[in-house]
Image 1 (tube, rainbow, N blue to C red):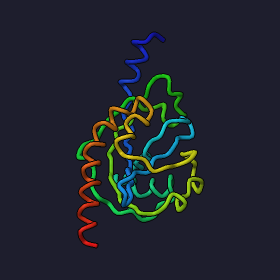
Image 2 (image 1 turned 90 degrees about the vertical axis):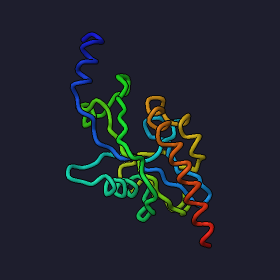
Image 3 (image 1 turned 90 degrees about the horizontal axis):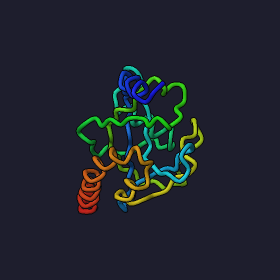
Length: 172
């Protein structure tokens, strides 16, 4: 199959609906994980939205599945769905091969737990390890094909994190 046929085949496929979660603490740091299939790359938790599931419900479910976080405070969300295409070189597992890429909704949560409170293995393990990071560093830390997506929501979420911390420090 030539490159044009591959591209035509890719564009005929739908996007998979997906939700991404940015979780920050009282210091304004965000949790990122080193992906099992992309060692050295760090990203926010994300996952598919099940048929009939609301994206906010999916975000809460995925937070629990990927990090073991049961209760986080919703702060805001990026107002638009953001698409990205899977690169041809990705080597997708069978359930993702029918999709062109993902159409993501990004949600910002506050959670002031420690990394030791997270459970990476109680469900299908997505991350080798996790760490806190400055949100602006995540754009360069993520795999290259997701950088444009991160560049859209990171500046808005950085401002929302700063505002949330400022507002909540006044009430203490």
